[in-house]
Amino acid sequence: MRNVWIGLISLSVAGLAVSAQAKELKSGDTYMCSWGAGTAARAQELKLSGVSLYAARQKLQTYKFAKSWMRMMAMGITEQTYDSPTRMKPAAVRQSFYDDCVKYKLARK
Image 1 (cartoon, rainbow, N blue to C red):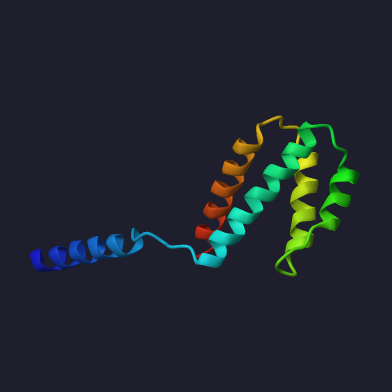
Image 2: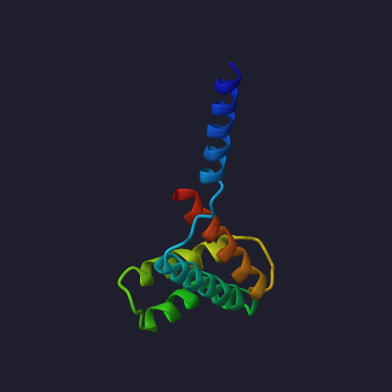
């Protein structure tokens, strides 16, 4: 009986150790979170300076994006930023977006 308990305890400790290992993000995920955070910060800057959503979207249309998914993602991030009532500073928006994005990516693993 004692050997059974020792075996069960050692297996549970080993299971906890494996599940507690840090999950790592891929470099593509880190890049996407960083890029999205910068986009959100720029949108917040425009919003706080009084630029309309329409003008912000027009400004986005002039940008050259490195990847095909970036234009629509930037539009969505900008629209959500404008819809939010927050008056946070752009640096705080950048940090918040990045932290939440990383949490989301890690939770999906």
